[in-house]
Length: 403
Image (cartoon, rainbow, N blue to C red; front, side):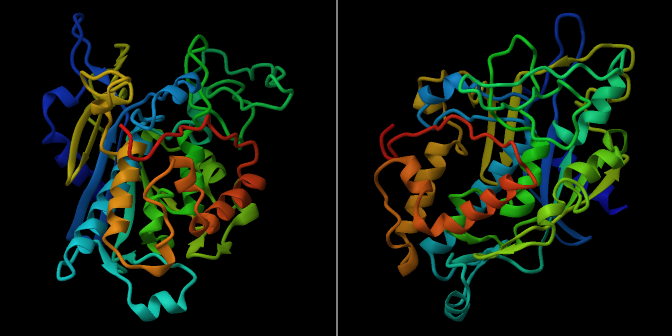
């Protein structure tokens, strides 16, 4: 089965990672568990390449974001970290092509002058047309796609009473990640313990649903690469993590995304629903792995990121052994370092439409450039109907070239 074959490719790459990047065994002999996600590009069934894989299950409290200056990840759930890894890889490929006009990439290509003139999308690069993107998750994405699994795990599945959810200014706030599970089809925050510091980071179900509209490209990567082909073709889940009604509601064109199903926007954007498929393979550090029955597994605080250009072990959103206050602790995929990589790549190009993108100033100004207006319009439409209730996180602003 193709899905099993794809997952085997991801597992093989995970198996090559060092032991320090994986959950260990505690003093009671209990092996830790962690979610894992991987992204592959497929030309055909005999040409499958893993370009990003990640593990992780935590995010940064909103109160900490103003302190981190772009060097600390806000969200290192496996799905989100893998997508950041893919973006970093593709940006690196753009840089390679920009540095050497004779070089080629198996994954992206230069757009011709006629393509640029005839298109509303002005980015100099595009994904190779022969490629399809598959994404694997070892656990059902947190949020709407996993709510039935949360209900089934309760000793008492009676829906919890719905309390008032008002913010300090009286506006309605997002429901807790695992709370009020009788409410389905809604935008949720990341799940957390009741005593955890508050976060506005949205669930992985919500972020993946949004990626059906914006593509997998980040805002900064979309300065370089046209989004038209960078959409998930199929999402693969373990059969034990797949609830058809939940996935159709969270991601399907007849579920909550129905108001914008099939819609197209300027700039190469469209709503591209992905199909959810299953695999019989079980991740070796899954909480449902063979042999773990009857033993309460322990969640791991270790996250890892791998791409062909990156191999990092992370704790609390920074490189293992570093502190929030140390810029050297920033992952290669953090906002600060990604911004600089994109700006350095743009500096190697002579694209008139991108000439006004400033290599100085602040991060929020970079994200606010006019050539990203099409992408912002896609998000406004998605938040207005399909993903109503999406509240922006606290802004992480910083000087682009000051450590």
